[in-house]
Length: 116
Image (cartoon, rainbow, N blue to C red; front, side):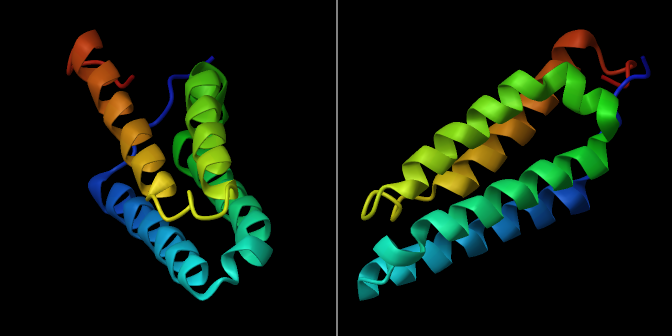
């Protein structure tokens, strides 16, 4: 099995920016009261967006080797964001930042010379 590819800075910044957009949309909808109606569809779209995005940038081997941690983080974010008025918290942004930082920490722990 090949080693997963690293995610470069531009893609990481774009992922966090998209997560901020999802959180902002849910925050604004919660303030208007429409959040309860649109929370679940937005969460499904956000989860699918980041799931596919991680597959595209890391490759299948990256998903296989890191799948449990990423899926657990994204699942917790989806649960936080699915609850009306709790979705005011920036769950998607925190989940994506946590996932990206844990990937960087794994690389540092394993040594900078390795691709993992």
